[in-house]
Amino acid sequence: MKTLFRSLAIFVAGAGSAAVVAGLYPNEPIGPELFQERAIKLLAEVEALGGYVAIAQDGRVGIYTNVGACVPPVPIPKWPANSVDPRSLELGLMALAMMNKGLLAEEPAPVYVVGKCRPYASSTFKY
Image (tube, rainbow, N blue to C red):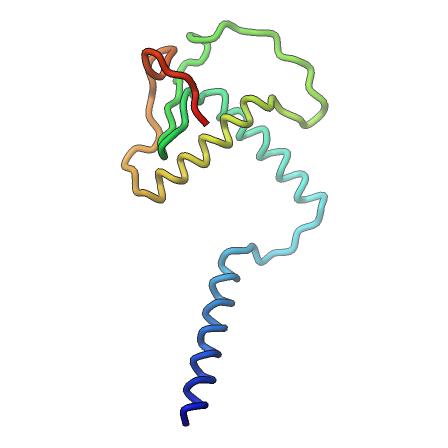
């Protein structure tokens, strides 16, 4: 009888673990072409969001609402096909990670507007 309960407990633990793992990973198969197509679209979107990021730290993201008021227009370099500006991409990725931390911590407003051109009087962007 003891062995039966032990076996049942092990089975339930294994089934529970499998259910948790199944929820963490996508179920649909994907090929390299579709993965690359989706990644290229996502790169462009994250890079575009990164252009608005002023500061991202402590689970909060400060954004500029009018980037043109702070930074004079600069010539855009010629990037290879489907690539994006690595600086804006990095800011976008950091902002998404900080926003996720804020949402996990149930931060009421993980995204906020900073001053016109500087997040704080004498701050620098922190990673």
